[in-house]
Image (cartoon, rainbow over all chains, first blue to last red; front, top):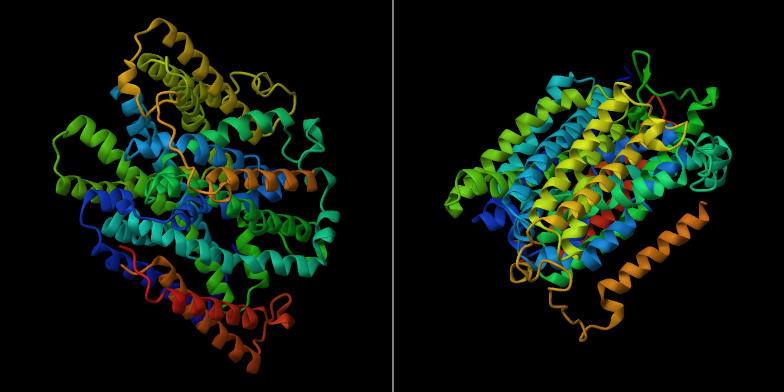
Length: 553
Length: 67
């Protein structure tokens, strides 16, 4: 283990951050008087606030340690997570799906399933989401403990306890409101705290061109080696990237995962809600400078013995997630080390707070009020939200120890997303755009999709089946298997939902008004010039995406 | 309620000030063990940039409130 000796100045910076966010929690508690304030942040955020929070809720451990580590492991192909694996879905959410979500005034994504289909579909999704959220929350805890362990030499157990306790305090005080405030602060801290890692790395190596010249060719391109999986770092074909990541996992996550969608629900009006994911998409495209570039810099340095740089090892396994902390250790002097560590901590805590605030909302509205106490008062639901926050954090501590056993954070994340989000995207797509999909079709389709994805995960892990039978190629990485499993889960859910809908009872059309395309009044934006519409910014975002993909082809 | 941008400005101003003072101290009393590219003094100019950015955010948003 390499332990950084933090100076008093570094400790001061970390302490200022902790005091600041806990103080903010107490300040915001004065404005958290109702369940609407606690769970929806009062629905008064601008599109900029909601948009940055939308992105930041996802910019936790996954993005920082996980993606930098994965770039070291898989190369430039990891940029697909930020570009084709995010932007089209975010734009689609803003332009096509948000009107159905926002106009129905629901509190959660399972709430939409209740209105569009029925109670059992809602509870199935709510239960799956609650479990997934706690697992993902565990990742954030694990990642934070890794940083404290690496930099400060703290014990794993103490690290998790301190971080979980802090998040518990400020989310319990003011719910989504404080989660969103800390996410905005985290966004700025991450950019200020980590920008110099990549910048100094490029300066040490020479230039961006030199960085790309010194990594293996299979790690340096986005698409040109995707025809043959043995020729790229991720061992995957273009079809796996497009269908598994670009379509199912990406759309499944960005359009149905309540953790991020909840931020758009907090927007003050429909236009702000629609702009939320589109504004976030521009920032999302820029994040690779922080994590992909840092991963490539680490790859170059590790390949040159003269630099003395190498990743940590846990026994015989390389700890890919140690890449970013070790780069901070390499370049940052006193003061900046405190800022870098604070940026990582802020990312993890905001990521965990995001998961916990989504969990407490789904538990309170879609499980507790739906099944246990339908007549609960406003004050009681507010109390239940606070209790759910504390219980959720305790459960996520338990799951953190499971996350620790995975070789890379992202492999663990994608495994979870392919169980829950991938089939849900098929359900939501059919539900929003096809009138004749029935409640029973949705329920059994969702169950079949989730069940098949979980079965395929176990079947590959315990070698019941040959992985090539799902990845359609003889060579495939764990990540490729995740992408393909998500695709098959989506297909199974899609087909089963349609088949059962053909033979089961449909909902009356009057109950679907405002929830399905064709039965929803199109709100005219004639008074707004095209240049100010979500459609314009959506097109602009996709145009930049295309240019980036061609440039790094 | 104060705007979130005001709080962002406050935090960046505080952290920028601490980093700048620390960098100036290191300039006068260089540490025994130097980091890679320490000759560029990234802490000094980055601290100053944070301080300026934070001050602008704080001043511009000091009177803004949300509902």
